Length: 178
Image (cartoon, rainbow, N blue to C red; front, side, top):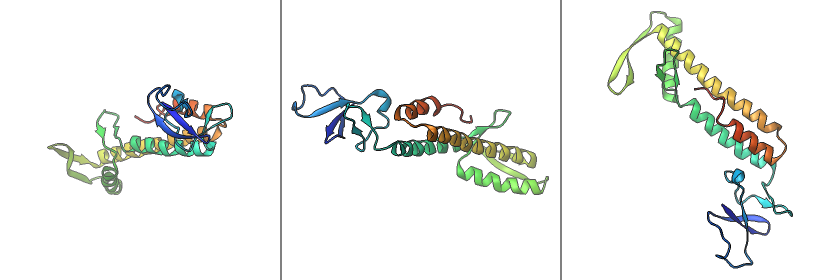
């Protein structure tokens, strides 16, 4: 990836080597691999020719937005009961299960006669199973938010672009609930 520099700012991006393809007065810089996911037209060049974001806070804001999206995908992507049964954790399923959870906690005889497990698959859920599913969903969701909080704190502690990006690369795909 290459960036065209205009008045010190990254004005345009291309994916091919620009040498000899444009007027020689046009300044291009190669964007280092580790910066490619982050650079945009708000970035500038230093006097030494290095690329830098408008501020560390601006880069952190980008990271926090992507982190929230990652957490959302994990949070709503499902979990498993200890026996390996897969449980969806999308908002609608969580709402239905949590309503049943409240009833099951209040009445141990409560049951759902026809819970849909998959395409054409129905079966009953007793109170104990409903509570187990509710507990698993709640633990999963809280673990996703907990991991987001850990990464957020680590990002807030970094004071340089390079260390922010290194930390992101090392942590973003680690430690999330299954």
